[in-house]
Length: 193
Image 1 (cartoon, helix red, strand yellow):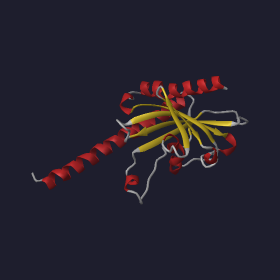
Image 2 (tube, rainbow, N blue to C red):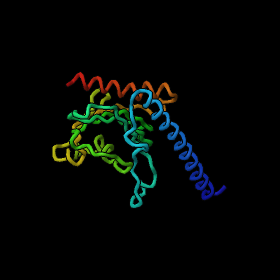
Image 3 (cartoon, rainbow, N blue to C red):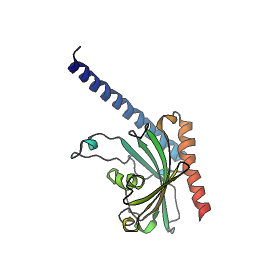
Image 4 (tube, rainbow, N blue to C red):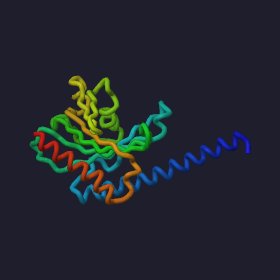
């Protein structure tokens, strides 16, 4: 075979692997919603959040997905808590799953969220010019700079824990690692108040 033929086969194989990965992610998102409902978590949107762009080739490929959940809260509460399961196929060492708790000023939270709002939930752990980001024993904490709070829907704080995506291999893993993780974050937050 020539070099040209080999390179073409590599591209075809890579696209095939990517399609299979997307198919597996679709199954994971369905399990997240099914188990989330059983555990009392309501999807904020029916779809995952993602970044797409025609202007940047990085935006042609979806490699980061964020699925948001909430629990019923007191409508008079001053804060709004949203939970996120973020899948990053381009993790630093391996594809990762992050379990995230976002806390917002309830007065700033809008009526709806769309898939293109991805940046609001992606930025807190990556944009150190807009957020104070700290890591302590595997727990990431992010607080927006004062001037950024309104832009980020009144975000007060976000906390996250990362794990390898491949550690989630069954519905029981989804229940234990994701939704029990959300519940632990909720109980630790209420203990802090």
